[in-house]
Image 1 (tube, one colour):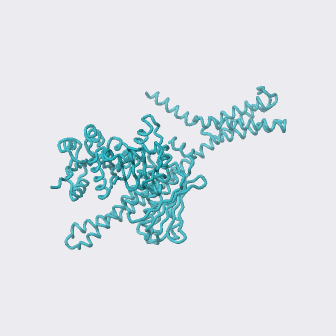
Image 2: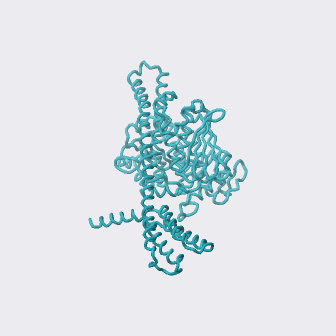
Image 3: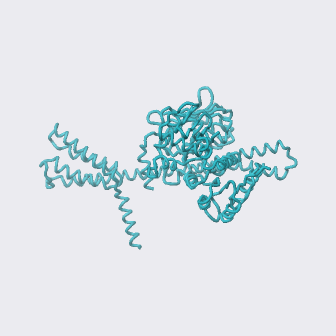
Length: 374
Length: 235
């Protein structure tokens, strides 16, 4: 049994140093073929063979850079040396390693591939660590913001209940109704916080987000319907292109982004009565917009909107009771996880406009690979 | 005398039971309560409730087991309530025969509306009886003529293709109820169909362009994100 596990760890270790994938195999062969083709073409111009070894050296560097681990880099240097020797240098179409300099060329190519392989592996690991640190930072920010923000509504709810339970007789029916309505609002706000926390666990849980092709117009109408259940008085107007736009996304997460943006528009827009949801496609991107007719976003806040948390003093300057950081930072990380971008500005006449984009093509190859290796 | 509708509330949380009982009683329902799966089992067979509200997270057994057991012999409407918010749980419950699904936390208005809708469906068993009598389903300006296999919008033929008609007809038969993507795909393209949501999305987009005034803001066929489609209640 121990031997078995040892065997497995050994194999795992081997796989880490020499990971094999058909994609890398194709990359390796493609680059080598290109190098060979280039040599063949250059030979028509210049019959000397000085450049051949250099071109293959370059190919080896590229292969090491664009494949995982050392396997293909080493393979490429072996193939390169043999290829250079066999095809492109005198005597042509013959293997001859006795000519002086060849063993040295071979060693240099091997050394280069190992060095480049090590460097790229290091860079990739650093990137991964940085991404993880980023995630960790976001999680930390979120927890801080949530625990800070959850206290206020909870205090209001508990206080209100105590007031009614203990001094019920002295409170006028009008005040009682007011208290109860406040408590309901605070509770609803807490529900929103919980929904956002669920979105975050959904993202950090199962390795990575699961994207499917979804109809753009459906996520808009589904989000608007859910939003209107809580805010029936706000008019939501949806504009989507006539041609069906299929967008790769996790529809539940994008729905949450839209709901967050709409709720922000109401809670921070203060005078918002109407929200426009717009969808269009431009340059291979799906562009979503949430525009309101509220009071707009204060200039000082605009650059810090997506920081993850508006610090307490900023909050005091803005005189906004609620931290809009939670909802927005969740939106930001959801959009980023989809490979999109997000920005905010004030509209020309009235209100704020929040815009985010999602790529229409599934080209986040690197991202998915990273996820599967976790 | 007004006969009250009997609601069986299967829920283990005392506080939730308390507030739901208060609301339901105030709205004219006769409320029975069970706090465990075993209790629920006996009460369902002895009291024959008009509607069951079932919490999936019970202490002694999985709510899904109760759901499947009841569906073996009864068509009583079941409204599933759960704190699990992943849509695959919703899909699983709906596919196992639940009539509707509420995620905690929900508002009282929502609860009452869902109960009313679910009870209405028993009065027209299988949703099809009303349609079977007249052969027609109407909701607003939308008319589905099951005899002629045609869909009309404000009296005009919507010119649906065969698959589009099948989809609308199916949703009309179960108006008010969410039909899951998998269910719709199996009904339309057979049990061996690859569960490829994309064909369904494209068909639905075409249908909406033919029957809705604003396809992005539908009035008849709604999307439940990640779960399925729902036709508006008939008139």
